[in-house]
Image 1 (cartoon, one colour):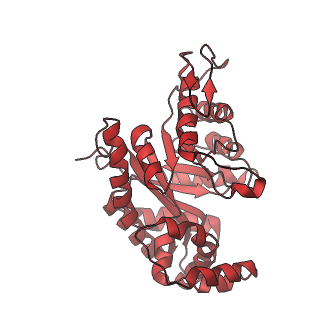
Image 2 (image 1 turned 90 degrees about the horizontal axis):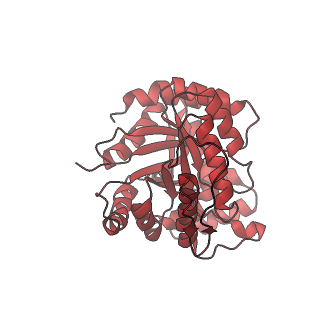
Length: 338
């Protein structure tokens, strides 16, 4: 039995950082009561920085793991990431994880992304060196920590678990060498679990780690409702907006040749509803959790059976957010064998 298969599969929710203060605490406390294991806040471009929502989550909960998926070392120096992570871990009593990814669409704010894998590896090395407190420093090609430099405040832990967000084989190889988890964001496709495990195995072997050491996390837009048609219509609109960026990353999926250009054109015209209508049902099921509680439970169970370490139900959760959360907790989770 692999290390990953021996663990109980976690269920998480992923929240966008677009809410009013107080809303995160309300959602997270209810999620914890319903049996959710992990609360993630995204760090997407042009949304609010995620640390403030997560500090709110930390105060409102006692059990759930929590973290950012994912901090980006091109927009935030690893020194700042380390400090925010340390504050979150302290506030939560040691429940925080470190999420890192290279980010997307940074050309919109004039940032390049040279050597992204080196940036991720160096960021992780820098942060770990700083949090360790040993003063040995870190000599990376992109980020460097002088020997003797130590933080001037108390830490909850020197080594919170590391998650790397990546779809690609080289990102998975890196995660296999240095991470505890890898997240495939925007996917509900069971076939990606096996693909990712094969890619992770390369890095695990290089690092001398047992196969299955790194947990695979899949997360995607989630819309659960008692009204199946309404849920899937809402999810289609959400998926249409990111399908162009995500679909090409999945080597197991072949889309109709004209689908993405047609969706792209409608989105340029501001017609999200028409763009959503073009998303076929089988494609929708690969890139979102949507439908009735029974539908969503079946999708999640397929991922569990494929060997994920965590299923992450992403924003907006439902047509109404809190109603969707209630259905996940009371009607989806009880069906899952994990």
